[in-house]
Amino acid sequence: MKLPLLSGRQVLAALQRLGFIEIHRKGSHVKMEHTDGRRIVFPHHDELDRYTLRGALRDASVSEEDFLKCVR
Image (tube, rainbow, N blue to C red; front, top):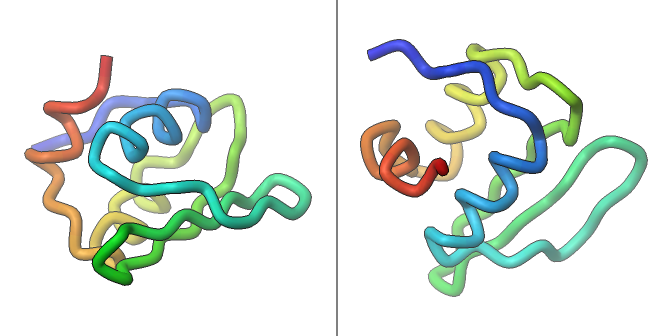
């Protein structure tokens, strides 16, 4: 499945719908944590590279299907 091109704002909103909470932001990078301890770090750019997003989701154990359900 091919991920769509998303902005950092869209990724942030989708992850919040999945239960992640922003815990830190420095420069253009956002660090979020889930209540079960999973963490994800991604760049908050106008357009996020698909491979960067895919790697961040894999590191945080978030399936692409679950993530795409929360993207609006």
